[in-house]
Image 1 (spheres, rainbow, N blue to C red):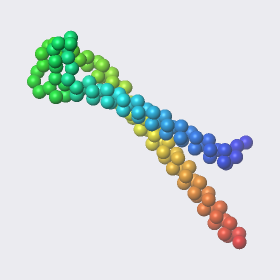
Image 2 (cartoon, rainbow, N blue to C red; image 1 turned 90 degrees about the vertical axis):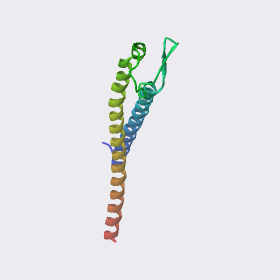
Image 3 (spheres, rainbow, N blue to C red; image 1 turned 180 degrees about the vertical axis):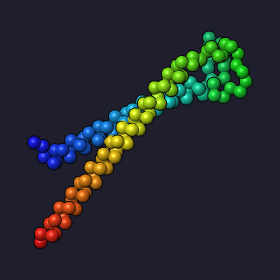
Image 4 (tube, rainbow, N blue to C red; image 1 turned 45 degrees about the vertical axis):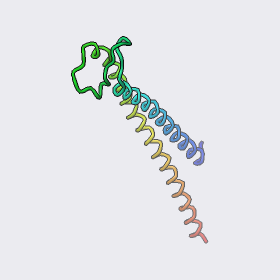
Length: 122
C-alpha cells in the first residue's frame, strides 16, 4: 500500500514529465515552423543560375521555372507536422502545469487543515 507522500510524489513526477514532453514537442514544432517560414520568406535559385523571389513576397506571376523550383508538398508536409505537434505540445504543457498547480494547492490545503485541527485541539 502506498502512503500519501508516495502518491503525491508520483503525481508530481507525472505532471513534471508531462510538462517536459510538452516543452519538447513545442521546441520541435517551433523548429518546423521556422523551417517553413524560411522556405516561404527566403529567395531561392533554380538550377543554381536563375534567381526567384521568395514565395511570400512575390507580387507578379513567376516564370514556369520558378514555380517548379519549390516543391509545395515539402511545405505542406512541414505544416502538416508542425500544426498537430504544436497542439499536442501546448496540451501536454498546460496539463502538466495545471497538475503541478493542483499539487501545490492540495499541499497548502492539507497544511492549513492540519494547522486548524491542531489549533482546535488546544
